[in-house]
Length: 349
Ligand code: SF4
Image (cartoon, rainbow, N blue to C red):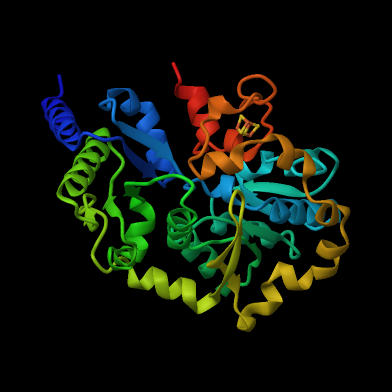
């Protein structure tokens, strides 16, 4: 018996009972999504506490237009490298994996260092950069070292603000992302008038953060607290932020499930424009059928966009576990190990 866990669960039950209304808490980090599922935390919550998944999976929130664009580059003969999960995300004319089976030079890498190593053999290599403040410093470093990049990097906080502004789901509190916060620190969250707790990734971390959120809600406080003190400092990691903003400028960002979120995208600065694949291969991207046609099939049937915004659960999708499985994913939420559909598929039992 884990007495710390039991004590936290008792405190959660006691506090939730005293609140006497339904409480929606959203986790906005893919690793939290996994932790909640792996430890079966949803089932341990009192009846009035609902845990919802938000837009924390970088693969899932990458816009279909960007996926189609990188596939168009691969099909045009340009070598492409990216992180493994992204290879299987379906685009209009198949995935990067399928492009590889047709002869395109597509490589999965674990890091931008791997991509830089590949570039020695493939000088035209394009790295498909994705993710939030956590992965962007590595891409920025690699650009400084000469890597050509198609950037879909994003800032995370604008998506949280967008969720609040859209108001589709009443969010009483955010379980805020530990990894992103290690870079950005605590300060930036203070602009959002909602209860927030930055959390680590063990079951104990997540439960402690849920308890802290419930206490805030009970007391009527809308603050940001830091449960993940061992990794997240008040001012974050200034060196990592400098690396990001040396290379990237803030622009509007295109998110699956949201569309354009103002000032949420990270685009390569003019200083490095020769390494910006969106500029170098503009014609291919614009002229490709993939880019023109967009992905009507995904738009019509996959519910990933609503799942990312916390409006639907994977089981609400008629294709879940039928037409769509981790072996044969139909949408990005089933591809990534951090995607809500993939996590639900693996841990539902
Ligand atoms: Fe999309 Fe598949 Fe999830 Fe349905 S089960 S929402 S098709 S990823």
